[in-house]
Structures are given as C-alpha cells and as structure tokens.
Image (cartoon, rainbow, N blue to C red):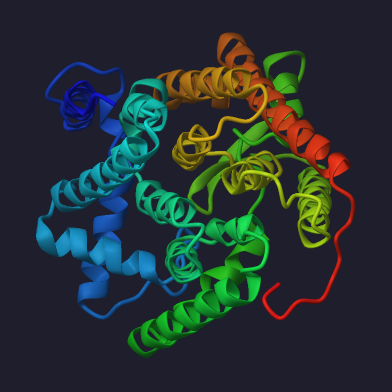
Length: 392
C-alpha cells in the first residue's frame, strides 16, 4: 500500500476545502459553507458565560456536542477554532483508515475518505458531523474488541444519537460485553455532563415538534408539486427550512413507521443470528442509510456519516459494492450542487433544482435498497440461531 499519494491527496483536498470555506478562492455561495459554525460559536460563547441553549429550538444535539463547540470557540473565534478541530477529526479518520489499510493491504477505504470532500463539498469541515463520524469509524475498526467498540459507540451517542445504530453491528458472542461497556460509558458521561448542564438532554423533547425538511424523502412529493402546477410554502423552523402544508404530520408519521419497521426487521435478523456471517460495517451502513431516508431531515452533511461507514465497508466489500458506492457518490455530488448553489431555487420550486433533488433522493433510495437486498440474502442463507448464552 502506497501511503504518500494518499497523504498528498488528503492535503490537497483539505486545502481546497479550507480555502473555499474561508472565501480565499472562488466557490459559488461560499459564505454558506461554514455558516453553521457561526451558530456553534454563538452557542459556545453563551455556554462559556453559563447560559445554556435550554429552550433554543435550533439546539438538536446531545450534551457532549457542547464540549466540542466550546473547545473550538475557546481555541479561536470566528469559526477558526472549530474548523481546526474538525480538520483534526477528519485527519484522525484518514489515519485510522490508512493504518487499517496497511495491515490489510487495502488502500480503497482511505482513498474513499480522501475523495469525500470533492464529492460532497467543502461543507464537510463546516459542520459538526465529522466528529461523530470519527467515533463511528473508530468503533467499527475495533469491532472485534468489545471494550473499545462499546466505548466508541457511547462517545458517538453523546455527540449525536445515530451511532446507537452501530450496536446492531455487535459481533456474535460479544453483546453482553459491548452493552456493558457502552452503558457504563454512556451513563458516566451523561452524569458528568448533567452535573455541568442540568438540562443537557432537553433536546429530546424538541424532536417531536420538527416537521418535514424540504430536502427529506418525505418532502419530495411536495417539492415535485411545487415545481409543477402547485404552490407549496416553506419556512425556517427548528434550524431547517421545512415544508408548510397540509398532511406533513401524516407523512412524517408514515416515514417514521417505515423506518421503525425496517430497523426492527434488521434487529430481528441480528438477534436471531441470521446476520452472524455479515460484515458488521455493512450492517451499520444499512442501518444508517435507513435512518437517513426515513428521517424528517436529510441535510447534505449527513453524507459524511455515509462515506465514513462506506469506507470501512470497503475493507470487505459486499456484493454490488461498486454500484452502491457510485449511487451514493451521485447522491452526494448532487447534494453539493443543491447546497449551497441551488438551495434557494429548490425552496422556490425551480424545475432544475427539484429535478436534481429528485435524482439525489432516488439514487440514495436505490443504494439503500441494494444494501438491504444484500443483507436479506445473508439472512436467508442463515437459519435462525436463537439461543441463550452468557455472552450473547
């Protein structure tokens, strides 16, 4: 495995990200690339003065996120500190993949991560998601070590909720140990953070009030209608542009139920032993894809999670891995075009923007369906293995 070309590629692509994000080279609508960091810094400034975002509807994070925001703010203001920490987290993911790649003589995972910002855009370092992805990648690379796997998932869950899905990737025979380390770390972290911030988990209640973000799968019919004969309004709510129209609550409920059903099926396959021979990274990737396509929010930065898990999956590529990767790249690439270039046009029902968005959604759904079929085939080849073991 030749590390130097990958390292040079990482330096070049991240230099492009930073120069674009700080407006030092041309990138369309570049002022929006790191725009969320200004909000992170505002929160952090208030937290530094002991004013926590308890009643802020835009705060959608578990409490450990506040530590990251505060660390970036204290390091340097004006987005610099946060972006620096994001770059360090990004580098850590790259180095983890390079080291694992050298051990397994496989450079594809590191190559995928090196290319990620070119595909999805400079937004990768202007959002919080790279920190959570670091925890998820580390967890999957140490999936065979219950302590490290459980601790990494707990840290990820204290940053953002979705790493909980990685528990579905727990290998056979290590569930009890993994859950013990996860629960212990999560409980200890929650206690410490609660002592610092008494209402640190108040964000959970705010999730119920969220509507359909205009980029979500559930909002696609509204977007198509808005680009055609109809007129669908939208408004800024809970930190996102959401559809304001009749029936959105029903659509939100339906896609949530679909997500619960699909994840429930995946959980059933897992606990009955039908996925014992599956690659843990493939299980994690599918679980996260399901959560994304059935979510009421589908922000472009969510693809950071997908590329991180896709990179780990590349160590043992599943069936149709190339097709899954291409579809994800198309979806993420169009996401870069839509945000920030065509976002206003999408909101206003522009035909080209909505057509591109539809392709973005359909390719992501296609990739998810292929990943689903892969694990369904595995489940069919493995009969139920329900049994009671002290370590399962």
